[in-house]
Length: 455
Image 1: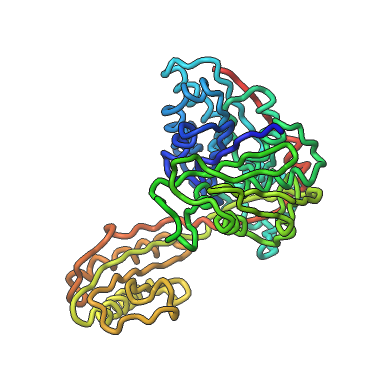
Image 2: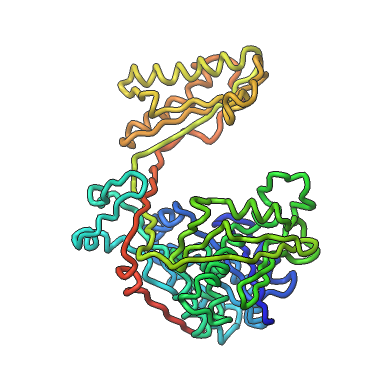
């Protein structure tokens, strides 16, 4: 039975930059998925694009392409990624520039567009789509002037179209993480759009792969059992036409692939385990069967699925005020007492100046005395040093900036023992809040565009 090997070389923008290179060079692989987008990432990309219209994509991906493009073209390993962000065409132009620089020709790059809804929000609201917040039920209309991004999660089908068009690299914006693995399976095996069980199997494969090394020993609860985590191998799915697959990694790499590591990744970001909803299918995770099939090999089978929903999820974000935080280190006798006094000084000086913050809009953390897990571990009564971290949030950037001017004076106008002042004067930073919503899928899918061009 024919099988294909799909790896994942990035779990988020900021993941190990060498991982996809080692995945490409460490052994046979047919496809490499690279996931760069978290919910907040598109807002970061929007700010970049507003400053420079040529940006708006994951620039790390261009660095990867510069390192490996000749090998990709020679080995015909196909790359699927959402690195295109808010500007997949701009990302393609940069890839073409790299190809010309390296003297590589004949590379076909596909672009999937249609997920970006920001400019359409007023039109959609006027047409009767409330885009209500899935957590609060609020309609989006009162927040329109504060929205910073709005993207619908696309499924695997437009990626399949790009692969059918011969694309070696497929650049997308906000597609589901699972589509990076499901699309090659549909392309290779011709799975129909209503074969729910096999679509669910491909979706589960994508979910296991999507966070990179989390399936191969990274972030594993029994970390002491994981050998050579410094050299962790990123996951690969060896997938067959019937929907069964094996999770593994390249030989000679560190990490661990076991029923436990795969299980922990399966429950990551899990809602209802009987209904894992994607644009392509609803997968029943309670039907998954796992079995150890050898060292660093886990077989996954038995997966069941149900028809997809008439809606697509929209991941939007909006400006929700400003924040700042700063910290100092206090040491010596009575360090915790001194840290508490320093916090009191900051709040009282702000109040005197007319910039009081109520307790709900300010934070105090005493690092080293149980701040991370309060009440779980007993804090030392007399720690030799304490890191005091203070923070505020407010609708007014001016008020937040005023807070930032009160940390440094503690060095000479606060308690003794200040031995560290980190990061300079805190600056007001925008708070980007998440807005999840649903939208009828025809409003999005009727406007999806796929183009494949060759350098």
